[in-house]
Length: 230
Image (cartoon, rainbow, N blue to C red; front, side, top):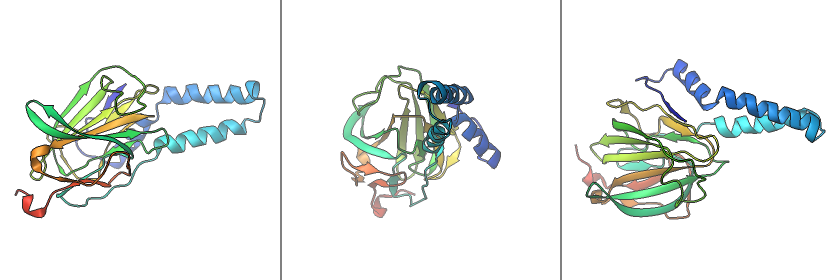
């Protein structure tokens, strides 16, 4: 399921709408009914179990991360999770550094912009919905690719990849819109994956390692100030 929010500015009203998108009404109703009847009939316990389980579900899957602007020389983590791998890949004849972050069910599932700049493109690619147990899975899954341009980092790509169960990606980006590092970009429900790409020719220093846990806003890579272009 792909949800593409096309508004150009984020207002309080938009945030309410975004929260509604995150919390699929149909899914809410289905899960509520299942938990309720399981509590009463199958488990033979008080309905309060349903309330506690549903409260846990709400807290886990609707909480938002917190990130701040650190500076144009930094590339920050757009997601909370675990670094699965750091590779050099070839895209359209150019070498890119690929950093793959795996999100588990307990991680915050909102994504935030890793740099400040202008949205170059937002591309939705339909695909499969395989389980993402590690970084080798999900290559052919449904995804949204957001490309951001800046003077310091040229063009950075953030790829949101959907998982197996709820299959929902939200994205607030719009081409030509100016965004700020750390601001909310979108969200993916349940276990999922986020890839970050930046050009190897930038010679940025990578400050994370495979297997490392990262929070939203942690520094993934850094450029020296004398490398910045104005």
